[in-house]
Length: 383
Ligand SMILES: *Cc1c(COP(=O)(O)O)cnc(C)c1O
Image (cartoon, rainbow, N blue to C red; front, side):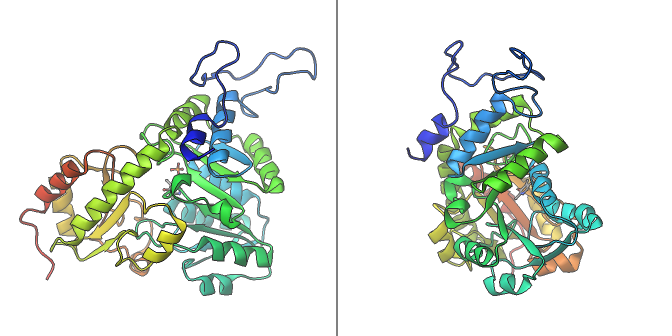
């Protein structure tokens, strides 16, 4: 079966008791058992829940993995992955990793003895050089936020395999529609369900998908033991979202491409980051490992003052954290997602005060462009 067919059908059948086409929301904490030790596969909803099972199977199928393990947030999924490591184990992460990943590694897990360092993972030689005898995990993101840098998945998988290290890819910005890291030999793929997979900005969740049975067993054990589970209602909302993933992603990508090309020609812009533009340093690699170039475009207006004026004038595009919903959102990384980083760190990552990140929605692109256009009127042009 191909992608959209699996998105709609994988993981569930019409409900056997009623014929309901939509997955029932099993809002129950516990399940009746037939006799001691005899039950129908479910005992308690922290351990397993039929609605959550459907989502886990559906997404495992879309990533071409054998097991999906869902959590109450993307960060809870990351936490479970980090719990697989032991004190004094070493982990190498992309330096432009999601802010919440950086925070949990530096401010939670380093206190429990995790040894971490951060490198530009798009530079495979640098990644390889960071590996030590104690390295147990590589954790990276592609595309990265907000500069949309791309890492070669096949090269990372081969480095990890060579050294017998677990490789993890946070593929939230890409979704399985645009790239499937497990196909390149990556050990596990992780998503914030909150973004494109749900796609409607109405829940928070996370998932890890893998075909490595040992890792799957460890994560399944951690899911019930630490209890950071996804609720049946949120699992249902997300499963409803994944059915239209391909349609939505096609529109996000088409709109983002149109907007990136339009933005690129504006005299007010100092710099634009979109892997679909030939000027992006990883355009060719993105073309090789992704089906299309994604829905996020970021651009630099040169200063905080100009960025603020621009943001205040926007009507349709909404200033907010998060991304991947049907509606266009715009964010200011320096004061929002990357506010906790010191300025030198932001400069190193290419996140100046004038940078804005647009999560292009699936409205009509002409309307998004018209909103951006009126916000540019009279704005200082970059010399
Ligand atoms: C949002 C996000 C997360 C964290 O997910 P939550 O659902 O907010 O906990 C992790 N990685 C990336 C790339 C994200 O965009």
